[in-house]
Image (tube, rainbow, N blue to C red):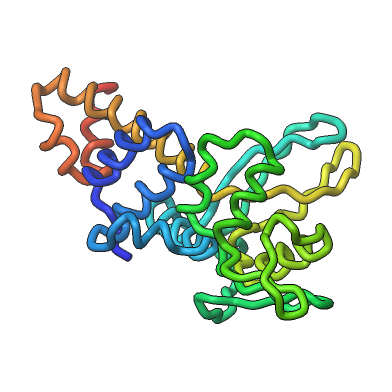
Length: 244
């Protein structure tokens, strides 16, 4: 993974603004970190592998500390939250591309969901339909007492066991934060979505940077490329001179 330049980050931000779906934005961000890897290959990473790379990218761009606001679901209190990237990194177990599950009289051969699977849900609105489509894509073989059966025929208990097996094999794909409210003492878990978190930070960074470019270009007549080539410290010095 390489640390992207300011120009490459701005290009990724610009492309991401035109992409309506978070999965596409996630892949766009990965491309700036892995410019020599095709998007199709990146889309085949498991969700946990993808998110681990995005978390590392976020740390290289903005540092290890992350600040966020969460709302207590019980009393509506707004809580400030600070976490470190290391606290969100989950050790990924070594798994093969093909996994299997045996439960009762069923045997399932499957792979872990990836970004390509999530992209296939862009036109699916119902949760049950989305789940079924993912299962159809990731299950490579389903048998009952040695005889092949349709994925749609799997009982809910088997599907639930399969989902637990997937979560255990790809723990970075679903990172839950243990939260508590000091006001009402409510305790709950919240999903940390690195894609939306990183995109929100990148969006704020890009807009702030372009405002700096606008101010300096307007004052000195410099080109955008020349301003972006400056270090953040030098740009800040010039901006402070304008205010002074």
